[in-house]
Length: 277
Image 1 (cartoon, rainbow, N blue to C red):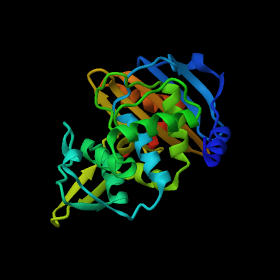
Image 2 (image 1 turned 120 degrees about the horizontal axis):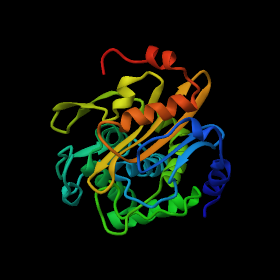
Image 3 (image 1 turned 30 degrees about the horizontal axis):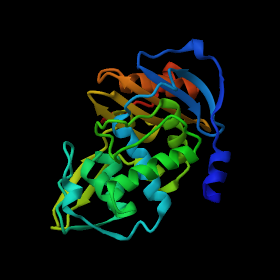
Image 4 (image 1 turned 135 degrees about the vertical axis):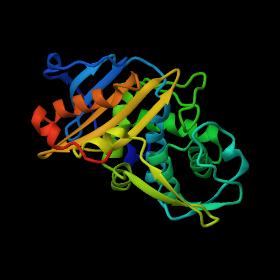
């Protein structure tokens, strides 16, 4: 383990004791709520169960890219980057974009081809980057995860847990570049051709409540609807990981968890609701 990573792992533990968990519950298969500053676990449900986490694992992909730096370096798209479905940005071989531009498309639009391009550019191949992902989460203290691709599409032997993903989320929350990108509701992506496409953040919670300040959505048939979300209120900062939920309630349950952790009253939550979401 490299020395900076060792420091990071020691600095960002999750404190296992749970406070006031009886006051709240969710229907999702797995969940965890924690104080983003201290790592105190406020609520947990099946948080160590291994399961598919879909596109929420792009948060780990983004963390590795952001930590690698040189974000204004150009990435030339290759054919292998485009060989995935669905939810593509439809970047083309030969086109060039900065890592920073691709990070925005990854986190805001959840583009699977962009994830492949960033991974291949960073590690030389998808397989090598997946090994980086597994190693990085271990450095953060995660013990129950294994990754096969950078985008969360279904793959044999790929899994994580709510607790492990909370470790990733807490580190990403402390990264200024990712904090800014994850809190971006809309982004104009400019293709090499000059065409500009508006991207809308897939995180409905971010677009609904002003106390939410980002993180990442995910969905596959195997994983169900997943959402890692973060929020701030009156100096408090919390992170919620909800895995294996349904489309109709994943954002609602995430909001409920965050509001509970942030100690917000129903009236306070109501006042933070955004008019145009």
